[in-house]
Amino acid sequence: MPSSQIVAAKPETPEGIMMSRQEELPILPVVPLQDMLRRYMDFVEPFLKGQEVEEFRKENLRLLCSKATVSHSKRKLQHLLSVDISYTRHCRVIFRGTADSQNAASLEAIKMAALVVCLDGGLADAGPYEVAWPRQVCKGGPNAEYGANRWWDKPVQVIVGEDGGSALLYDHTAFDGTVMARVTNHCYDYA
Image (cartoon, rainbow, N blue to C red):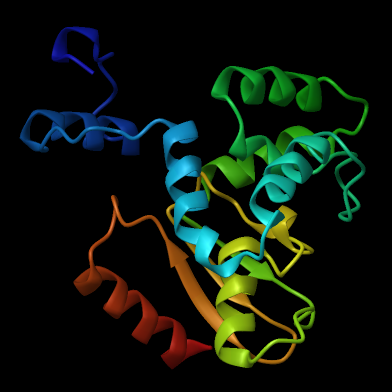
């Protein structure tokens, strides 16, 4: 954002503190969400079998506004993060306008979260653990059973499986190995 478009904020607020240092930050390109999803799918493809890639994409679109498994939402919000951002904005407006008053609070909590913890069930893959666990982490299981339990717009996802397996799934454009090594050690120290 050019400095001429930056809105002045009070210096004592978090926004004001961040904006006061804005000029010093390097300008990095932001990968559009659809490109990020395409790169993610390219990464996940070796873990998929045959037609699973196209089926996974179709399933994501089909589940966009289906019933959720959490009590405070009628739809799976996570799926909105894998499609065009204008559609996501439209759906968020719909969620905020529903009779369920907790939707707005839930959306705000999700928006403000620096990371998310994804609690998965057991492994649904009968393959060897060395193949099954990465497939579970990267796409939510062999048939994306836990695919709605991934938040693609969050830079860090801590994934914990029912069997005790855990992993960090993070956006490599935002973090390098040194930073994530410290985050990983912190998670293991306090888990």
